Amino acid sequence: METAQSQFHEPAAHAPELSCNEATAQLEGLLSGETDLIANAANTSAFLNSILPDLNWVGFYFLHGDELVLGPFQGNPACVRIPVGRGVCGTCVATGATQRVDDVHSFPGHIACDLRSRSELVVPVRSGAKLVAVLDIDSPVPGRFSTEDQEYVEALIACFERCQFDA
Image (cartoon, rainbow, N blue to C red; front, top):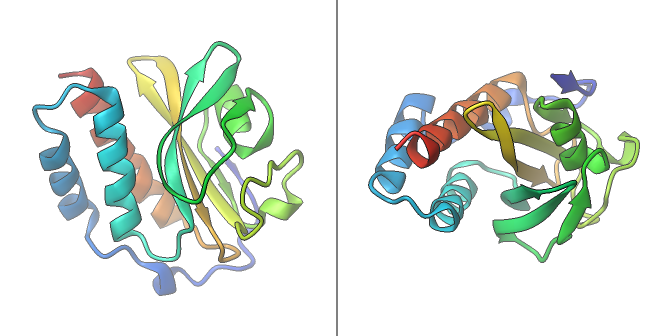
């Protein structure tokens, strides 16, 4: 897991509205019984946008060959295609690890889809061992994402993976 410096952090100021267990139970309820990937990704991004404060973008990019292609999201229009290895999302795919960046402007190769974004959290999504997508979350607040936020979102993505790919 690659993590940028945490010089900006004020973790309590950005706490999610629900505990991790409550959020996981609600997300599982939303996804339960539905097998359509687009529908589940849309509901997951809308759910995360509703429970995590201080975000300006949350959504999925799906891996197609050597690039990520925009999927369901909440926020302003976004970059449609991102090459693997480029920017925070592409780096997540290339490394297979969550990327938590406190200051995207200092991230080498950052792709500025929204100039208001200052920090970013990107979590890989897997079907079994295969990386198939990433969840990208942007915030206009520098240092918005703590280690606890990362673990929280990773737990919700694990729920998404179970509901979507293990059903």
